[in-house]
Length: 66
Image (cartoon, rainbow, N blue to C red; front, side, top):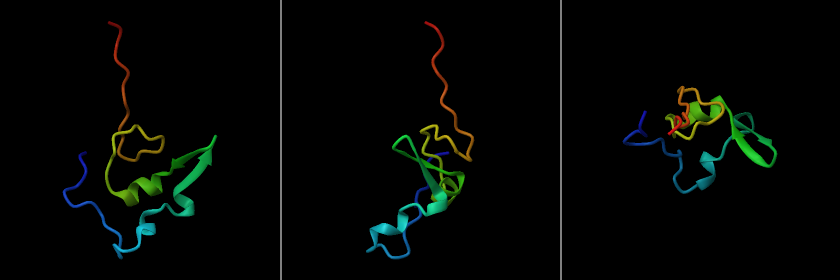
């Protein structure tokens, strides 16, 4: 699913911290921030990065043998 024409915007555009994930929307693993399904749903669209907890069902496939 492509990003929406008008992606969600923070309630107060002057506050760039509005889109930081809440505590229930990520966890740290080996120094990396892993977003949960709750974060992706709040974001509202699939970024097509094959995220571990993608609720949109996107999975990258590896190319077959040449």
